[in-house]
Image (cartoon, rainbow, N blue to C red):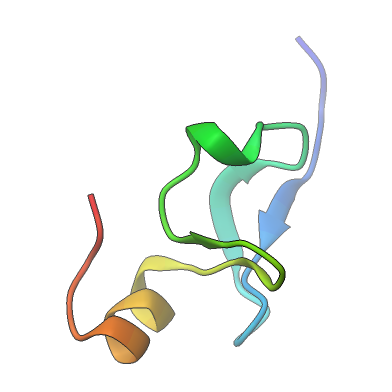
Amino acid sequence: MSNLANDVCVLCGSETLYPTNTPINERVNYIKGAGQLCYSCSSDVYGYFED
C-alpha cells in the first residue's frame, strides 16, 4: 500500500477524502476545470452535499 497524499479542496485547502491518484470520474464534488471540493465547501457552493 502506498502513502499517497490526499487531494486538497480548491476553495479552503483542507484535505479531502480522495488520494491524488483517484480518477475524477470516481470522485464526488469534483468541478471540471477547477478541482476537488471538500464536503463543507460543496455544501456552501451548492447548498447541499452531492452524493
